[in-house]
Image 1 (cartoon, rainbow, N blue to C red):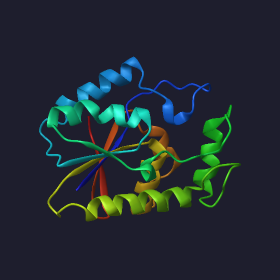
Image 2 (image 1 turned 45 degrees about the vertical axis):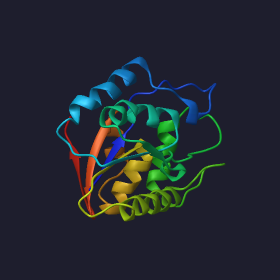
Image 3 (image 1 turned 90 degrees about the vertical axis):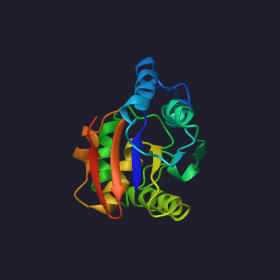
Image 4 (image 1 turned 60 degrees about the vertical axis):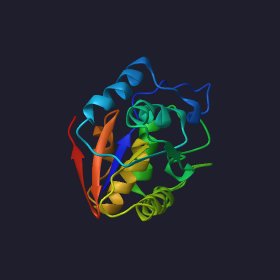
Length: 179
């Protein structure tokens, strides 16, 4: 079983690389609240995107469970483009509508889907069939993986995702885990 966790709320800044965006004060509180929220959930291993906000989201839980946080660059957010966009949401709508569309300096939805799918397949292969792994990642990365499992997950579903948001994946099926 895999749990896919979208990171807690971050502080977005066009002056910093996206990978360095920290959690906001609300995000830090959300990360701490995950310890209690997941108290009844067995977790045998924790993996994360190397992005600062993703690691910070699971750090309190990892400390509480005395588990290391394993980072994998393939769990990073999708590189939409190499420039700041004033209309980020419209660009996302376009790439969700055409999985082969690549914006300047970016990564297509199909490329991201393959990348994260391979990473999660390796995470599963490292663990026994009864083990449960938590993976902290990003909205687009998780949404594209869910789309790959059940093509019905799309742009409108991505827009509804919260920070943090949790999904349980068992084989090729997934479900949203309520807060």
